[in-house]
Image (tube, rainbow, N blue to C red; front, top):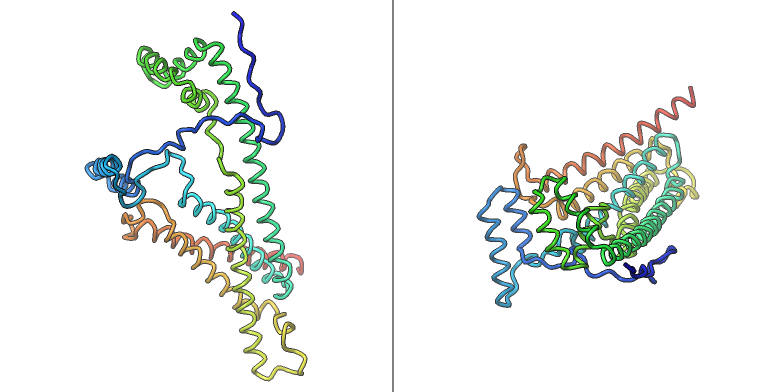
Length: 338
């Protein structure tokens, strides 16, 4: 039997020439009051879960808008919640790097003005590098996915019996009966685009790539820039207050104020580091409270809701990072001087 030639697939680092696959299941809209469904799951309330599905379906069928997220974008949403988590994720890493730099530098004798002058550009450079790497890796993943998807589609169009047999074997290996697996695969294979998506997940373990990699990288980078600079801003403000307080006490000649007063010794800048760590911990904890885990109002074993537990955990982790950096800096200084 003569087979069709394979469709063109991308060969380089750009995915602009690749054939655009049809919308995946992650872009399909499912009628469901998602916050209520999550709440029902956390509480184990079956009736509330049914109500979440019924209410959204009824509202959408008669043309009304229901409160909350009635349209659930599949199981891989790219909306407000995802962007917020990308922002926090990028910011959390940058904030930790900033606190590690400040605490280690303070403990090892680095001047406060040098810490500000060197640390902020280093953290921003790291944020930009991480965002660029994320974008490049996402682009490479997109190219790989499109090439493999084009190959699977070509194989399905040329040898559908073999592809269906492979999928039946996979379903049977997962515990499905042979007859049920064959019936399910026969039904799905009638819809070629959908079946290729299933083949990609079941045969290759490949999920659709991020549809907006540049936006995701920029979101994480913005979070890294904002939260990464927060400790330095708090540290600088505290240094200015300490310098003004020291200058008001009658310290020396007329030329000792201004920027020079910011260059405090490590023992004097330790309160500024403590203030920066406290403000950073509170800011990160507040973000966890706002964008914390689903079911955040469910009370845990300690009598705290999940969101409060997540927020307190962020505060503790931030304090631990600062203490770790200070301890490592102090230990390195002691070892080198001894």
